[in-house]
Length: 220
Image 1 (cartoon, rainbow, N blue to C red):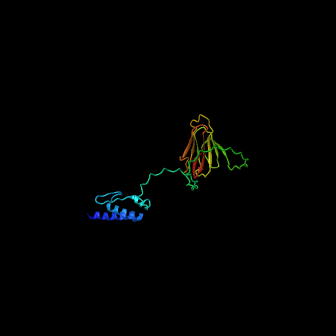
Image 2 (tube, one colour):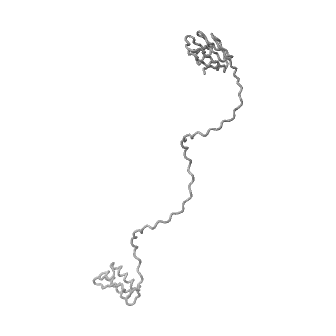
Image 3 (cartoon, rainbow, N blue to C red):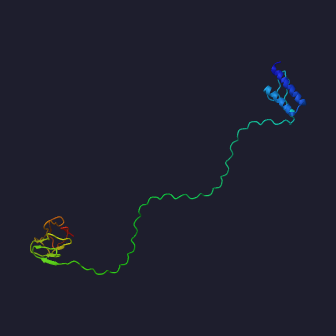
């Protein structure tokens, strides 16, 4: 008989004694010692040693054994119903001002306002003079209108020094055909007529209106 058989015999004797005279706790303790020694499940028999482990020995009075390990988790449950919509949050701050848009089309003209009362009569400051010449003539700023009627060509010489606003009107009072009766308006000194030293009229009833500014004559 080896040591293992001897140990089992001793444990079996302890179990038999617990069954006869022991408490359920002692019976369970003896069974656990035998199971630990054998390394087998309940109701196991080995040769040469008559050992029987019967869980009925406890007669439903044995305390419960230790809890087993937890089982694997179950599958996830279904999604619950959607909750109610919460209250609306406060309004956000105003955003920055956008760029100015393109200008729109012009509107229609408004109604015309009524005509106001007539103002007082003005005072004419122009000292007009008229002259008819039939031959060459030297004009002055005291002249205003110079009419020309001649049998041949004629020259009207402008003042050498003229003041601003000195104005002259020279007109051919001759109908067609004008022929060789052309009229030459001649500038003098350093003055010019629209950038040239003379102005020639060769058309019947032609006229020219000139005014002086800064020493030069300008056709208007």
